[in-house]
Amino acid sequence: MLIPWNTDAPIYHAPWATGGFILVNVAVFGAMLTSGDADQTFGPWILSYGDGLHPLQWITSNFLHAGVLHLLGNMIFLWAFGLVVEGKLGWWRFIAVYLGLGVAQCAFEQCCMLGAEEGGSLGASAIIYGLLAMAMVWAPKNEINCVFIGGFRGVMNLDISILVLAMIYIGIEILTAALDQFGWGSSTLHLSGAALGFGLGTWLVKSGKVDCEGWDLYAVMAGREGQKTKRRKKAKSKGERTAENERLEADRLSAQIQFRKLLDEGHARGAFALHMKMSSTRSDWTLSEVDSRDLIAKLLEADLWNEAIEAMVGHLARFPEAVRVRLKLAQVLIGQARRPAQALRVLAKIADGSLPASLEPVRKKLVAEAQKLQQQTPMELAGEDW
Image 1 (spheres, rainbow, N blue to C red):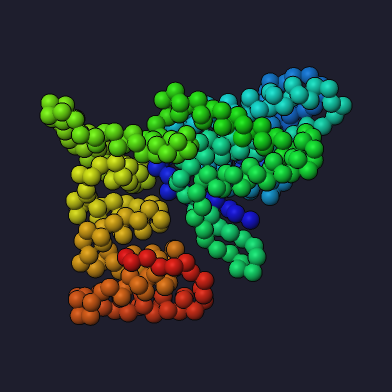
Image 2: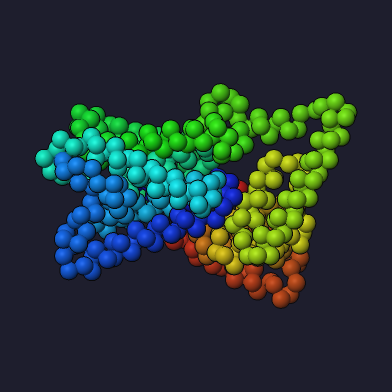
């Protein structure tokens, strides 16, 4: 089983709506559990088959779930793919897309089942498959951080591209639907949601309403990935080059102001996303040592461990003598990332006698903790030269 939980895709908007939808789904499920007669209270909200069209059910059925595992699975995937989609759309457009996918799929489903004698459906699965397909169209080469559960290795952390993960889950649904001779069931419902999401995601990127910076599925398939960024850097005539340089410099200064504003207002994730975007598209983008340290501090305060690790690695690449940052990186690798071997590699780069006397006990304590954890964590991916 693959459980996605985070992504390295550029996130330009905090996932407020994604978190809000998760809270609403959990609250509705809690109300169902505490209701004296859930069937009587919530039955009219389920998408019913064979008794006409009920537009209100096209909304309400998406917030009902049949059990704890049904709810838990949907909410995990909603978080993972909501990060990507809302990260590009912003909260209000994400709400419109989320509800639009649910209404469109439920309307289609209820129309198809007008001739049924009984039955119905509930849950956010079709919407989530729609979000999965949209993420696949917009960021196929970005990775999803997953926990793999099963087999003789137990629990492992894996990084899988969004395209591969989407194809795995969509492929499973196609196979399941085929074995059921494509009869109306959960697999066909999931696939209908994925088809809607794929179409919507394609239209939004092709019409320019979503900027994937040349890394969308169609650019990747055509071998044109990143060319939008490359075109900005293409040499031009002297007059054009001067105007372009002035524009690029203005953009860089504007981004620096926006970065500092996000950081000062406590939006650590947004500041980090802006920094990563500028780093990947601008060769002249760098953070001062002070800004880099402030970014690391804000990410750590917000418990954004993966982002903080990446920021600290980048800081050490530019300022290799920053021993306090190196110690903090090792601490996070041990305590949060559970990567003791990598922590030991990070600590090994501290030369003997280079630490102030006050920090030497900290280094020794971290080495001891990493060695102890390493005995308990025999499986760890190959380390990197940090």
